[in-house]
Length: 620
Image 1 (cartoon, rainbow, N blue to C red):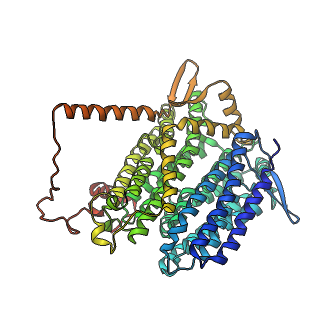
Image 2: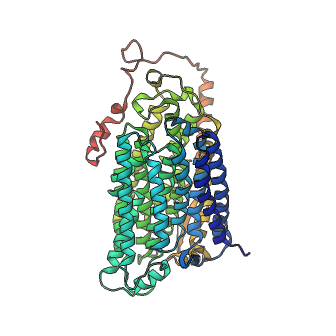
Image 3: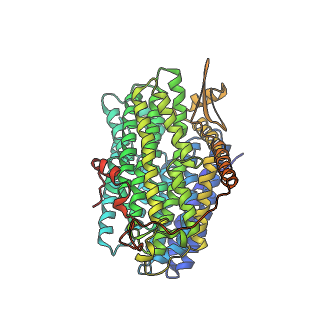
């Protein structure tokens, strides 16, 4: 099959670029502009999703291709790994674009021209980041497109001066991250403008002294800024993600920060020279895993303390990125271990990297769209002014519950499968590598903190009472154009939790077919010997003489057990002839329930928040 993936990529780029030029012309006709943007983005996304499909499931390998812009070649690489990220970015772009049609009516005092100029450019920049194959010209163009377009989207509500200041801070820090990456590539001996990553890797192998260490440190630093790794994420992520329009917040947290993850994985799983001792994977794996476990714990702890719904979600994104970074570090360390059992566990952790990237994109995008629906109908993000929305927005409440259970890692929802893949690998690897056991325990405890965060988010938004006293008009369910993307994402949260083995198998194939990765040959060899395989039981490793099942995720069994439990309880209840009586809620001595005697943010998990004051992010 002769398919010109690079030609199709350029077609999608042209459509997105054209969209940013044409749609703003009709921006005064707000609904028309929204529909045109959605249709054009969907066409480009359809092309890109086909590119991703071919890269992942059809082509057996990939080579860097130079595309000439005038006399200047820019290197691109579309392999299965980049195809995975292309698919996520494209899919979430369509969901956000459709949601935007009605949601942007929320901003009646603002022109939509800046929004529809920068929305497609933002998508174009992110696709560019995961397809360009250099760290100079092409990378710079893609990075600047992504950064500058997102800057204008973040500062969309420019009449709020604090929003402009937060956006300016974001822009400065992202440009600083770009400088780190560019300087890191420049330090490689013999590097020149426009070199492909493969060429840079070869030159890095011939670079002596401490330069390689500095190169890896700068690349890690730059991509960690973008990914929101602690402490860099705290400098910009909550302030930027919470003020952007909610469809943009869904892309920022669900997709954009994953470009930083893409860069970290490319650096430490692809930019490893086959000759020369330029990197000690045990040291770098330990460092990355440490950053990951600190990020997941601190970010989640700070999330629990927030009163602003979107800031809660933003800090939570930092925490969820921590799980992915922990898996990167643990996978890198264990892959280079001398213990065969630990080596095999590395493949479980590596599968967990991409599965949690996917799951987080879906459920965090969904949560930000849910927060957008709340803001659209109530005019507030303050959890203390919300409560009782389940009565007025029942479908949004159901969707929010699914998303909350997914991110909290409750079976049978998607977050459980990917989190448990990561946690089980670290816990079992801890039998030989002791610090990984500690990291796994911290990650497991942090999942409980995440559950607390989303009990708070859901409870204070949809359960209890409060909105009737704090909102001028009666909220109602949002339009179908805002509901459809949420329903699709909610269904995926369930599907990705119930049949994770399908995704595990796909991720294994991604690593088996992505040339240049340090783990490609090993994945192929282990798969050939049936040493690492997937099934309905999860990811299993098979050591000679012993078989260990890891990341066991059997949500269908959990569902059956829950159904049996409820059935037995119902039968027992009916057998005793019990009757239900509805009584008014006990108000602890108060005569009436009102805004002054209901639970507010400071009451929720007060003792736990007090115990974790030292993690920062405290709200007065």
